[in-house]
Amino acid sequence: MTTRALYTPEEILAATGGTARGTLADVTGISIDTRTLEPGDAFFAITGENSDGHAYVAKALENGASLAVVAADRVQGLPDGPLVVVPDVLGALTDLGKAARARSEARIVAVTGSVGKTTTKEALRIALSADGETHASAASYNNHWGVPLSLARFPRSARYGVFEVGMNHPGEITPLVRMVRPHVAVITTVEAVHIAQFSGIEEIADAKAEIFDGLEPGGTAVLNRDNPLFDRLVASARAKGVKNIVSFGADPACEVRLKDVVLHPACSTVVADVLGTPVTFKLGMPGRHIVQNALAVLAAVRLLGGDLALAAVALARLRPPPGRGVPVSLSVSGGTATLLDESYNANPASMRAAIDVLSRTPVGPRGRRIAVLGDMLELGTEGAQHHRELAEALEAGKIDRVFCAGPLMHALWEVLPSSRKGGYAVHASHLEPLISAAIRAGDTLMVKGSNGSRMGPLVKALAERFRLPGDALLEG
Image 1 (cartoon, rainbow, N blue to C red):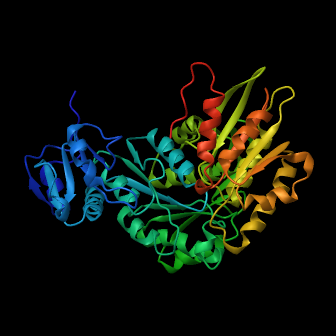
Image 2 (cartoon, rainbow, N blue to C red; image 1 turned 45 degrees about the horizontal axis):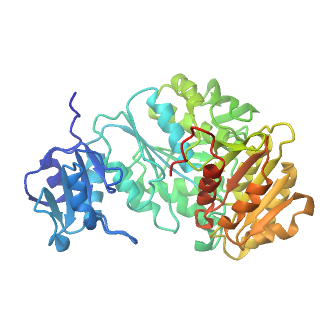
């Protein structure tokens, strides 16, 4: 069986404006990382903050890359070919992404929001795949190189496209969404995330509303009516010429309305009205916040012309992406414990959601619910207060023990009752011996913090230390 070419050499050269060196072959994929490169991929030698792809060109070609795209001022010392020489490699990748979008006849949805982008993107991928070939952004590829890379990988045969768009500062979404040009734009929610880079949450809403700048004519904005910034987002959409707006949530005025939900430890059962169609479905991930975003998913499916019934059934297959609630079994004295890996980033809204899920997760006999929390970063001058306020969620969730890591989390540690305190450390890695000594059979731990708080390595260390016989170490 032969793999259909993603691009011919002529298409690569036309899109990038590059010059060929050596004999070029058809391209079956796009790569910027030799560790994941597949034979037939075109390797783009991106220069980043910590590495230069030109140092890996020879390895990429040895590993079977069909060609490497390199900068003209970096050609010296590289293999003779096959190369495509361009003025700027990231610019060439962007141009290739634009070319892929221009040739596509797929129906496209773009997703942004302060919380829930990646899980919503995955839910859209699963829901739309039930109806036809669907291409979606990998991982959290939502920035100035991730979006062009995701677009460049867009096969012409795809019926649907799902793209995640993110930002840390104002003005970042507009150029990305103008590349994607979606037919449907989803904003999951607006919260105090990266607020240190903004004057207030209203400015965050305005930055998220940049997603409307690239909406195709006649396209639809899908917005969370339960969010306090809903009216501001609607006004932004109207000001940018968006005529079609669909709201989702529990509010009775929603076009996509949550009518009933039963939250289970590992899933949810949902009854909703989706643009006039009653739908009852099982959602394969726990959490009220996941239910909310599933409404946006079904709205987008309907608006893109997908099969709503197939999509609703498919959502039972939704599972947590890495670092967003993946359960890990730990072998401890006397039995097993469960670790919920929520280590991929944190903010006040996602932290409360994770605590709520922990509160609903079963424990064994004598088991306890334990929260292991790292700093939430980029919260500006109100950072300490945001951390202190988590005490209320921990109390409401009846969390038995709390371990804290980081200077900001000390604000929470100071207000916790002594009966709830498990341990504190300035660095996450220093919590490992404290947690290891405390954990017992039947416990459920939830580990969460901003990426900069280094909770991911703590999860890996605990998973390795308490690995079940025959289990593989966590990926990522």
